[in-house]
Image (cartoon, rainbow, N blue to C red; front, side):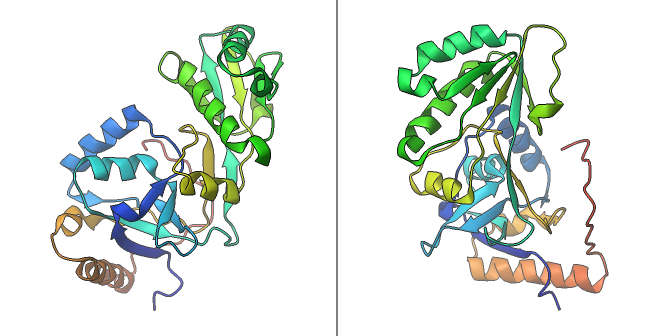
Length: 257
């Protein structure tokens, strides 16, 4: 009956591993919302890490962090195969307002080692990060975190999907063009307990599960995962029988996420 639906399950938070840093402001807003609400709507998307029994969080680092901060032991997730058709791993670029690219580039060169500074190129109002190489993978991840830390708390910045869409209106704007990542990179970061900066990786998932509206009381229960997952399956079965499950193929815009 429900074999073609997304793979939803309730898992232990201790088995989730983040691959990216979190946004403290968003964590704060989400914590307030979850405290107020009695339902959990949009589950994080996760993928298994080999045969370890653990999952890397592809999307939902902030939600995962909030549940941990609030003392939950379990969370609802959507489990996907990292190799499944229709899954895309893209990169956000950051448009930083309030600083000239040349000035920011000078700060980068002072902050990172000379060999690593060569990984970054100034091109007009853009700072382009060269592709990550296997031999200096971890060093470059560390440099990316340092660079984002330079502006994340001091300047306003925006995510851009495509660097070619960038146009400069005024001098005090800098576009940071980040390198592409592969699924293997993300798994490696998670396995090594490292993180890429918040708001860089972007996973596009075909068949994303939204608005599950699972009662929070189920996740808060002291009962085991078997019982909790049975309650989840009962909810899914009920929604299916009531013809409330919809599959939308077209891209959407969300105006209050």
